[in-house]
Amino acid sequence: MITNPILRGFNPDPSIIRVGDDYYIATSTFEWFPGVQIHHSRDLKHWQLLTRPLDRVSQLDLRGVGASQGVWAPCLTHDQGVYYLVYTVVTAFYCNMYDTHNYVVTAPDILGPWSEPTELPGFGFDPSLFHDDDGRKYMVCMVTDHRVPKKYAGRLIVQEYDPVNRCMKGDFHEVYQAEDIFLEGPHIFKRNGWYYLFCADTGTGEGHGQTMLRSRSVFGPYKMDKPDFGNRTQPHEAYSMLTTRPVPDFPLQKAGHADLVETQNGEWYVVHLCGRPLEQRNPPEAERFASCRRYMLGRETALQKVVWTEDGWLRLHNGTNLPDLHPPVPQLPPCPWPELPERDDFDAPDLSIRWQTLRTPLTERALSLTARPGYLRLYGGNGLGSRFEQSLIAQRVTELRCTMETCLEFEPAYYKHLAGLLLYYDYDNYYFFHLTRDEEMGKVVTLLKAENKQYSSPFGYIPVPEGQAVRLRITLRDGNAAFAWQAGEGRWHELPGWLDASFLSDEACREGWFTGVMCGVSCHDLTGSCLHADFDYFTLKNQA
Image (cartoon, rainbow, N blue to C red; front, side, top):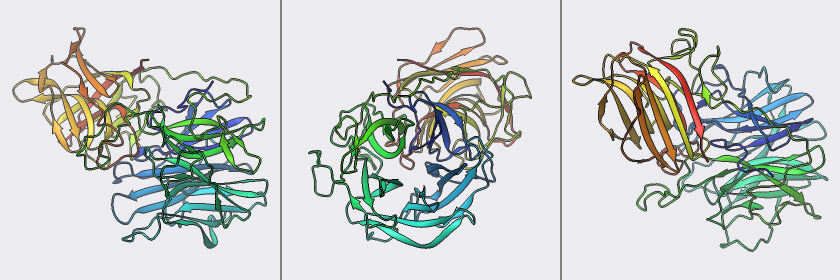
C-alpha cells in the first residue's frame, strides 16, 4: 500500500504529470530559493526530489517579498516534447490589492535548462495551462477582487495561449462566478469530449475540498458536479468530491487542491494537499484562526486512487469523499530510490539538493564549501528579520518527532556576532539556538525565541569554552522542543524542560500561513564585518 503523505513536510499545491513511464510532481516553495520543487517517481509510491527549475536570479528574485509570498501553485505540463511550468510570484498579499505576477518557463528536459520567464497578464493567481487535442492551448486562472465588498466569492477565467509568441491570445472568458462557493487552483482536463474544471474549494484550511465542473466547450458554460455524499451541513457548502471537512478527527486534514494523472495501465490517481494536525491549538482569543489546531509541518502532498462513474464524473476509489491513509498501489513495477543520508558532512563541492535559501541564492560572499574543505563556511549576514539576503540554509522538517544537530566553530567578538542552529517558520517566528558573546561572560550559548515579534531568551546566557567546537541539538516531540549543547569532547548539557514549538505553524503565525517549519544553520554579523562560522556537519534524524 501507499502511505500518505507521499511528499512529507511543506510540499503544497501539487501538480502532477506522466511522461512515458516517469511521473513528476511540482509543488510550491513561496519565499524559498530555488523555486518550485519537482519530485520524480516511476511507481507513484516512491518519490525522490529531482530538481528545482527556478534556480537563477534572472528567473526568480524574491528580495523584499514577505512571509508566505513568492512562488505559488506551479502547474507542470508536457506537450510535444516540451515541458511547461506556469506559476505565480506574489509580491503583495496581506493587503487589499494583491500583486500576483504570472509567468511561464519551458524546457526540453525536466532537468533543464529552463528558459527565462515570460510574464503573462492575469487577473489573479493559480494559473494552469491546458493542451487541447487540436494543438491549441489555454490558460485558466482564478480572479482576485479588491473591491469592498467583493462582488463574487469566486471567479475563474479561461483565455487562449500562443506558445510561439508566448502571450495570451484573444479575449478572456469568464467561466465561473459565484456568490457563495470560492474556487481556486483550477486545472482543465478533457475526456470523452468533456472539458473538466478541477478546482480547489473553500480556502486552504480545515474546510478545504476539491470540486469538479464540466462543459462541452473549453469556454463553458460549466456545470458543477453535485454528488450526494450526505454530509453537506449548510446550503452554501461546496460539493466536494474530496474533503476531510466533515470528519475533524481524521489524521489527514485540509484535503484539497488536487491534480489528476492516468497511469500507463489506465488507472487514475489524484494528488492533493493535506496536513497532519498537532493536538495544540491557537488560544480562543487569537487574532486569527481562534482555537484552530496547529499544523507545524505545513501542507503536504498525498495521493488517492480514483475512478470514473458511468455518467462521467470522478470519485474516490473507496466510494466516499474522504481520502485514504493507505490507498492501493497502481499496477506498476516497484521502483524505490536511495534515501538521502541523515547526515550531511559538507564534503561535496556543492550543497545537497535538500537545502534551500531564503529569497536568493547564496553567493561566495555568504557561503563557501571550499574555504575549509569538509566544512560549510557561512559569512555573517543580515539578521533573521531581513527580507533581503541572509547567510542561512534550511531543509524541511518532515516528521513531528525528530532530532537535528550541528557542530560549529565560531569565535564571536561582539554580541552582534551570532551563529548556530535554527528552527524556522518565518522572519517573525523561530527558535535560534546559537553562539554569541556577552561583555561579562565571554563566549556563550543562548536561545532566542521569536513568536509573532515577541522575543525572549528562555535560558539566558550560558558560558562555553573559548576556542572549542560546540555541538548544538534540538529535539522535536509532537510540537515541543528540547535543547542541548556540548563543548569539545565534554558531556552533553540538557537545558531544562520542553518548550512549546507549535507556534511554528501555519495557523499560529500572524502574517504567513502557507509554508511549514524548516531547520538549518545560519550566521549573522550585525556589524557588517562578515565574521564567519564553520559548520562541520548537520544531521536530521526522524523517529517513529
